[in-house]
Image (spheres, rainbow, N blue to C red):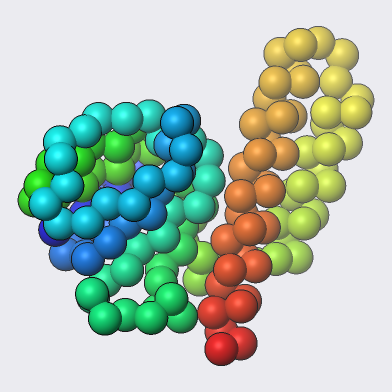
Amino acid sequence: MHLQLITLTGVSIDKDVYELMAPTTAGDIAVFPGHEPLVTMAAPGVLAVRTEKGDKDEKLEYFAISGGIIEINPKYVRVLVDEADAGADITEADSKAALDRAMKLRDNATSQVDIEKAMQLITQSQVRLRVADLQRHRRQR
């Protein structure tokens, strides 16, 4: 099936894949060729891509995504999100520092709007840390 991962800055992925594991607001889903048509909300989380049927988990590609929309039909999947960071581009140290800054913002927030913004940054940083951890374990195998 063909996968397109599209962000506000352009197309991040445009290739044929065997499996996509994606976070949705209803829970995580796995999508394979021939999947029933579906449109669902993407939740912030880890997007995992298996390129070939026989690929072991060590070959999975990981992306930290923000919420958005996932459109599925039997021949393609289109994931539309504001942001998607490839696991290879995420550093654990930077993500930890961003999480610390976001938590300080939350702790010092003076309005509900500031708290919500800080919570979004905390979620984004936690997802990036999870992807960095998955990427690190992948390299160690």
